Image 1 (tube, rainbow over the protein chains, first blue to last red):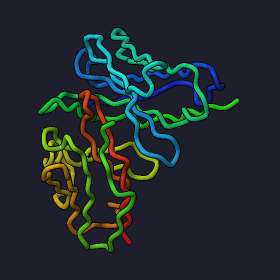
Image 2: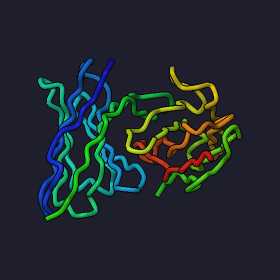
Image 3: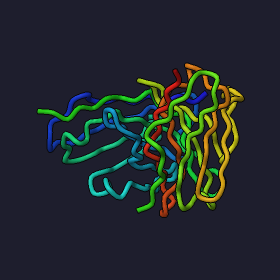
Length: 121
Length: 107
């Protein structure tokens, strides 16, 4: 079965770039939509964006100016970059596989376990 | 902007029926999905396409949609069902969108 695992620094300084990777095992990345979602401590889930296996992307409008999601097919990985971070970007970051369902809803399963990224000097 | 609106909290006693609602203007046209998130864990899909249960999800979990309201029902809620529940669908651009989440307390 497909499993996803996030990796990257747990601490990022304000104004710097947050970079995370998600490794996909048990299946190929050459299909589906590959998503990033975050959850600030004690708050709800926020979808960040996805990259389709063809390379096309879609981002949350509130983060679009700062987000890049990319694919590394040879490594079966996809990555997130979030620039100019502030304390408000402190969150658990999840990666998840998305598949297109009926009526165009991209539903997310499975998810990685999540990784906490803290923005602090 | 488009939103999915959930109550912040719902509380029931063990064995009672818990109902969690989600309101969204596009729900008549777009399916609702439901995720369960227990403390410190990643979300798990419990309902897809309005009312279907993935394998491994107990039969006490069911859901329905009527107009702009989707409802997750847990019949005979158990202590282990205590979690945050998120409805999920798409926004006006077709992008993923989560509701604000509902904390279910079973005690």
